[in-house]
Length: 529
Image 1: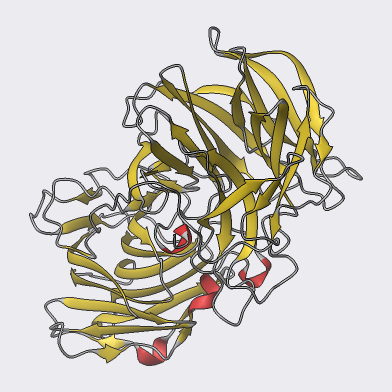
Image 2: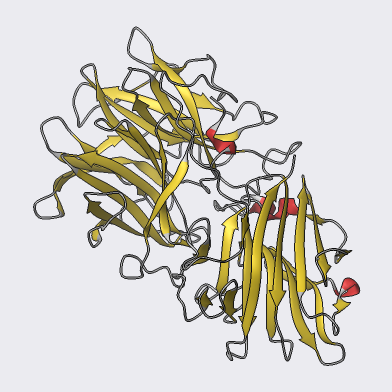
């Protein structure tokens, strides 16, 4: 079984939940979506090898409002579970994350069908992130999360806490139990609780989500502890080998197949070769085969602490899904997967496929620095060698009107090949960029396009190099920049700590708020060998 990370981009997950629906032998992973809308992506497999994006759950602002939320905040840690005919989905809406405080809204929704409809969100608590709902054998349900401590001279990650959830009242009840304070590695988060062989097993992430990330296991005979740490912790980490192709491996969750085999889904990154932290593909998901020892501890089946790059698949019939087309001619009624927008739903007033059939119409709105109302749709970049292209029709009247192709990490880090207008040259085309919040224009290579009726735009990525090109006919192309550093669109570039990875986006801005339309004839994402 090849690694899942290379097959389905799961953008970043703060928390990954993998579970089995026993009757139908289906497997699901729910992944974080952060500020990208719709929120919470659910992936589906029947063999743990082949995966598809099944649905996105949070589709309306009545379910969650992300306007104004900071980058790499918003939807963290979806936790999906199933009990007595009902799906339970927990998630955190992170309202602030950069200061000493964390404003955290933990919600629960339920549904009889993963495709919905889902219940209205019930807010449970805000003491920490990474919520997890444990269904015990006696029918009682327990909410676990890490607890955030903002006080000076205290560990920010103050341990794993648990409180009972009453499904009849939809509220937490009873005392808060402190379950586990982790190992000396610190930063204990991502709790997952399982019951097996007379023990409660608590699986946690430690070391932070950077290069020291790891998976640790503890156990107890009683639900409320005390929990004993695996004497040979951690189960898995890449912290000791910064040259390994997978990095930041941690934050696991477990599943037992119908044939009794055990697998662990976990976070990882695939840095640009030759680097340890330049990971413009963001946090991804991989799957490892595991085994239990005679004394009741979990180990990677291939031995050691490093995650395997290739894994033996389970004893299940293979079930592939149709490939997702790389080229979109915009000949549908709705955008749907793989596209997402920033913080707000994709609505016809700014993004339409019906106004001009065969085109995506975007009406210009706020700038790429906005955390509110951008006119932008994007999809994750999944490969270190790829080409992304589109064809644009656009008639800007002045410099406040722009449209084009952006490679976007967040409001402070992006590259943008855009068509705009200049007082002297009229319509012109060039690249603007932002690195760590510092805006710049590559004015030396701007192109006058007075005679162009359409604008073919292309971004070519090869390892760490990114080159934008443009053409009036889609045949003869002109480079619009010297090679740019694709690595700047990484989670840790410049000292920042983000989670989303980079996106390829179509966008339009009208900073004079006149909503000038831009028309895109197609969008193509092509992986290269």
